Amino acid sequence: MSFTGHEPQSPGYRWMLLALFASGLATFSQLYSVQGLLPLISKDLQVSESQAALSVSAATLGLALAVIPWAIISDRIGRRQVIVAALICSVAFGLLGTLSPNVELLLLARFFEGVALAGVPGTSLAYLAEELSPRAVALASGTYIAGTTVGGLAGRLIAAWVAEPTSWRWGVAAVSISAGIATLFFLLKAPQSQGFSAITDRSLKPILRKFAASLSGRRPILYLQGFLLMGGFVAVYNYLGFRLEAPPYLIPPAIAALVFVAYLSGTYSSMISGKLVAKLGRKRSLLLGNAAMAAGLLLTLAGNLWVIILGMLIFTAGFFAAHAVASGWVPVLAADSRAQGASLYNLGYYIGSSLFGWLLGIPFVSHGWPALVLWVLCLQTAAALLASLLRDSAGRLR
Image (cartoon, rainbow, N blue to C red; front, side, top):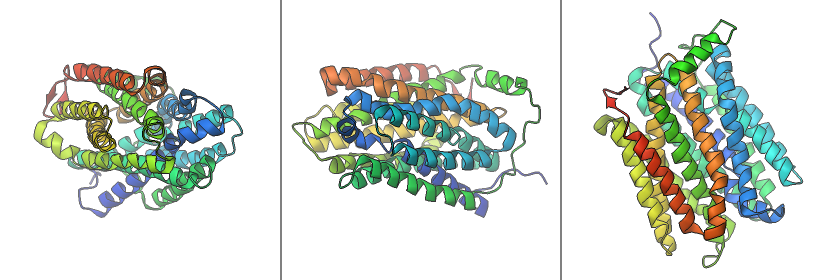
């Protein structure tokens, strides 16, 4: 009997979820470990806020540029092997970055750390789609995204708490060591591939045909969702720490990092996104997540710290719900080109992060938080207008 995928509640399904949760945790804890440390990096290396933010953008740029090469490699050697290799290399580059004497070498190390991490996001979604039954994919993709939110939260908090009594270097090192432990768990527990079929043709023509198929119809609209929404999301978190550590708040870095607890709302919203899709459909769920982002962002304009925190909870929940819907939609639509579709989504996702995570620092430095909020709302409006062009019928895009 041919393999049709692990069914919900089976041992293979449970180990798959736990392993992918660990890979998401390892990936995103490292990718954003420096985000809560940007004020410390700015002071230590004597660079501006937007220059310090390049340490986030350098990693996401490396990730964006490498997702397609990793997708090609994973089609030839397998998804599980690529994820393991990528995580091991990322831990090595993460530790190397802590030795950087200046911002230039830090950015170089972060760039190659991002290149290594690029092997995980798109490959994980393809791995998930190949090894689980179709009815399990929506729930499992939400669980994987939940792992990314926990990873993003853990990386920021661990780094900030360790850095407060020591330095940003020890904070980043602590995150890299934690990611190494999560990598070991994945290596030991991730199920061996049974649904993977390697491409044996060594020419690039079969791969290019798959990329062409992934760009057909209105699928690029999904990739642009990642580009626009992620760009705004990262910009908000990049510069929020600078806002909270400045007057009138004057919050220390270790305490300011607690705002990242808002990621837990994203953990919850991404996990329930599958149920939301079943009830409302993918298009409406995507637009609802976008609307929640906008509502939460507007609340952050308030001067009261507790209202800002509430706004970040809603903003984060909305983003991860929209991200889970959009990213989980891609491999379902591109059944014959899953890795390519997922890599194109991640390409847009992380180029948006790199570009807007740095670029929106310019209006923030010049005109303050309201200017940043205005530009992020413009990105969300563009995403919503594009999403309105999608057609959601029985889970298929036309």
